[in-house]
Image (cartoon, rainbow, N blue to C red; front, side, top):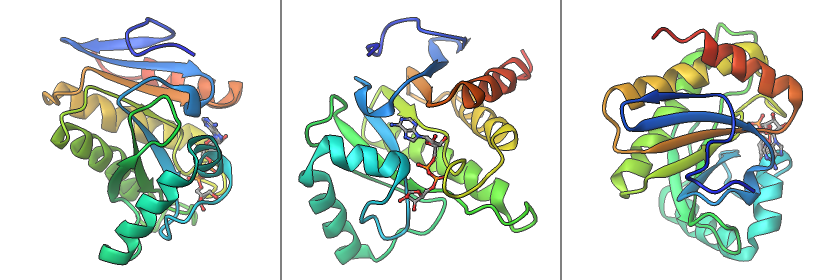
Length: 190
Ligand code: AR6
């Protein structure tokens, strides 16, 4: 798996900050934090959530349980941070994407908030590198072409606005997802 510093795929630089795309498995990423596409219970699930808990072990679930006991379920669009257990990443940021309901229910705004709140939390914790999956485009059914635009724009906006993050990487599981994100990245204005 690529480490945080390597040039690995299509990328855009915003001053010293880099946004890049790779095809691969999020759980193998050696970054300060990987972001989990969780559900509000924070108790695990399928997809990338299941893969993260399987690979990271029980420490992640224990930390999630403490958060839910203290604060209740995590609303869509918000983010929390835990340990990463046995994962090569140092932390896991858990966020909850919107379920796709046709696009008129504020899905794009909620998805945008997932990326922004995850990056804001990473910055608050002094982290430098973050890797995201394609939030909401699996079990939650968000069309990937549209989700990719929201995702790439939200991250580019945060990096342009001077986020202290140095590297944000999207780790796309399928060729089709990777192509959608590549097109979204190419569509960004200079
Ligand atoms: N690395 C990178 N991407 C992955 C991996 C992986 N190891 N595994 C799957 N993906 P999903 P959602 C991709 O369903 O739509 C869970 O049950 C996958 O191909 O994981 O936000 C939660 O508990 C897809 O492109 O997340 C929630 O209940 C993307 O990750 C619900 O699913 C997101 O798919 C959240 O649904």
